[in-house]
Image (cartoon, rainbow, N blue to C red; front, top):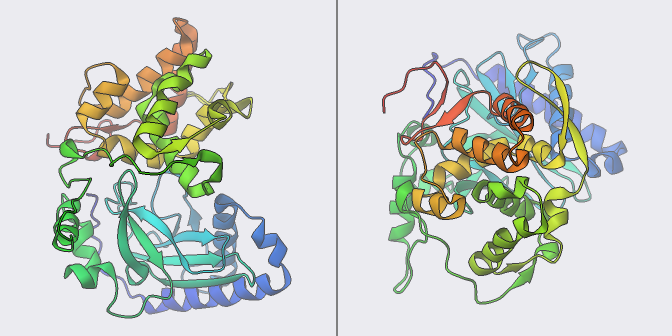
Length: 373
């Protein structure tokens, strides 16, 4: 876990900034509802960041607001030690799925985080609260993630239920262990957890009794399964229709989901411009752009996948540096023996992931940094 050792800063001024920003955004929403309802998650992060910048004028936070969304947590930082995570829903409620409990991509200097939540169902409304005060439960998709409830009452957070504070949990080497212990204590006779705090022993989900179409899933669910498939099947970056066979079979047998247009889920979009490590702009298949967009989720998926699962699907022995190995497999499948294409793909992916590696300890470190293995 990444843990900041900064001295605890005063928070009252930042609370005032968040309240002012909520007022600003809600006033904007009253006259621009359709504008906000069309905003993607990434564009909404930009809106919130711009609102924070406007509201910070004349305060100690002026000129310190920075948007850092992507594979880093949280999305926005202020004065280097406050943070804002932006979430939203297009529906008319105040709940959503949040970030990983591991927080392995947390910016080390950030001490206090607020959640800014955009309810984009009519009427559009924004609310901000301290991050830990709106986390109600933990859901397990392909890794444990917090569930957000902006209406959560005091004393009803997941941390109150587990008897451990947010800061205590995030600073643990293995935060999944107390989470698993808590949920095991709630199991009824005949029930069991399909996942384990020991990442090497995570089991696949029980095959669902019913099936559903991939097209019927909401955007968030689709993104989750796309991330899982591209993580487990680097062959998706290859050529030929057969590359969709194993992902389609996995989706059906493990998740009970049928996709009638698997090709469109990964190949649609033509080509996108990407940068190599040297900053050279090259055109790559659209799937590379999707990898960049979901790089944080891919990192988490690789960390929470067992060696057995990866080995069975990758068809190779899994190394310690599994993220680097996954990038190599993706590049090999894309290049199909063409060394120039392989080198280009590896350069693009290394820039995307910024030299980060996942080791057996599942620490998130940059090349050149020291880590005890």
